[in-house]
Each structure stands twice: as structure tokens, then as C-alpha cells.
Image (cartoon, rainbow, N blue to C red; front, side, top):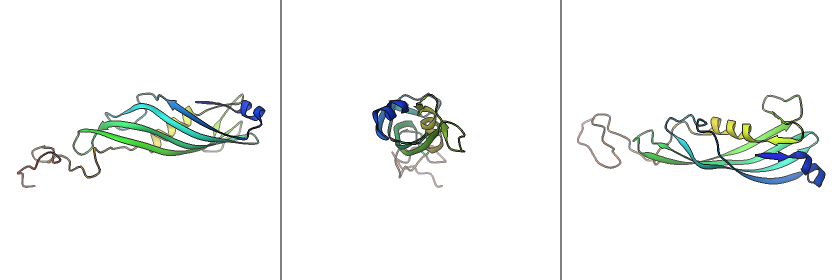
Length: 147
């Protein structure tokens, strides 16, 4: 996910849109037994201001794992906003550095997924889970346990 800032400057553009499909490492999610299913979609607008590069857009992907309530397969459509600034030197707390006119979005996108992706996922919003006594899936059957 490389953006050539020098190429933008030489073309006379101070703003441009980019779209990337990115395959992340398998250990990016903090949810046990969950994976990112397919590529991560990154759509951004890049704005050049002096030596700073502002990147705003969205990061989205499909997360597949086990429901935290009933342990059946769960699919979660994840999407989050991305808003970062790249600077040539003297970065502030949330800034990223870029060198030789090249902005690499990989670290910013990975950090955004790690911090914003859910720590639990559910098969559906109203999942009933498992009976704590007999363990049956309450979405599929009613049990006779007196809880």
C-alpha cells in the first residue's frame, strides 16, 4: 500500500484517491480462533500540505471466527475509519514518518485493525448462547434445565 508523494507533487495534484486490497498477517486479530477472510479493503483520500501527507478513508474486511456465546461459526463485517498524518521528520504522538517521497500505509492499517477490531464476535445479535448446565445450543433447541 504505497503512495508516491513525489509523483503526486510533480503531477500538480495536491489530492488523490487510492484503493488497495491488502492481505494481512494471520496473527493480526486479538480474537482467538478468528481470521480475516479474504483481503482487507483500504480506500483513502490523500492530501498534500507542505511536507505533511494527510490520509483519510476506510478500512474494511470480513472476520470469521467462533461466536462468543454459542461457539458456532460467526461472520463479522468489520469497517473502521482511518485518519493519519505522515511527516518527514519530528513526528508527534500519532504521526507516521515517510521517507524519500514514499508513504507506506501498512503499519497504520495494521494498527487500526488491532485497535478497532472487536475482541468478541457473535453469530447474530440475539444469540442465546449455550445452556450453562447441559451445554445445548439454545438457538437450536430448548432444554429442560431449571437454571
